[in-house]
Image (cartoon, rainbow, N blue to C red; front, side):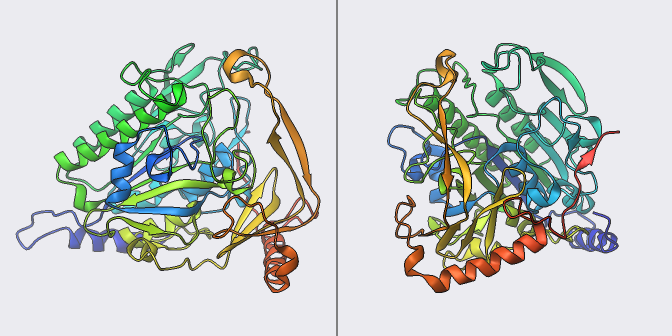
Length: 474
């Protein structure tokens, strides 16, 4: 964020925001980013869910743009959030896996979040919900560009009721800005409602200011909780109830924007942090027709539902089939708001033109999917996706502990050879066509070597030349 151009941009925005009579007029768009946790690709009506009603999100897609090949950088909580908020691959930042109460590191304060990027332009910024990028004071949202924070510092299962680690986690803290104001012991049923109400209030209070609202729902990450408003409403059990309440939350946000005359000056983005946690208990989402789920680099783990709406700007009812990734959101928001990019390099690129033209393709040469302490496991390039040999966790037949206390059963699978898939014709990644496309494979091998020199690859022993350190407490 330390950029000498910022003062010039702030002055320019101020001049644009004043009429000849001195009356201030907002010119920069508001940004609302709604981020769910472990929501599957198939868990919305507009993405094909047969048994969960999501009228508000379906309407959002009908009045905006639905992405069918939108990726996150990693299929796990903290890493996905780091990439989203910084526009940078999380493995480059040293953020892996899921941080908890014992972690002594977090998102380095030297990195620039979307909130920090927008603050010098006069934006009011808030996060309501799940942070998960470090719980120590120097890593909390209020030290990362956010004016307001109400929520939890890590995942909602990191509490004493965890079925496998009852003696490991303390009570789940609930933060108001930089202070713990309560602890959650047994009941999370009001989380979605509380964070929605905070978001609506923030919109109302800032209707005359540009704002960045980050609504990061802890649900539908297990353990699942829903308020009485939606308990028993879904044909998909408790999980479906939770998704219906999130859909209600989206509707409340749009209602607040409309009532305050902000629809035509607000970009709303909806997506999930990764694919669904998989189980046989009915407590998890669906990635259908994608392969596998959370914690893997298969499309079921890293391809997520993503919808964007900006009334009067994004054409209505369009579908963007070309690949994009969460790292692209920061530079896209920079382009749309006039904010300078961070001083430290980012990996994302501006895809604002893809929001206006569904035939447009990303400027990225490829997207790299890392996992498990800096393993380069997959690369997406246009219509193709390649996988490199690695080990991954797959659900084995059996019962999971989330439903009744019995430990979940997984099996470890070794992918021993490279595999190549043509995603448009094979979204379930069932037909390995590597032997039929040597030229495509050669392109991927060259891309992989560039990535390994740049960011490393634990699978090949490459360290990488351009890794950055996370923030650490003394």
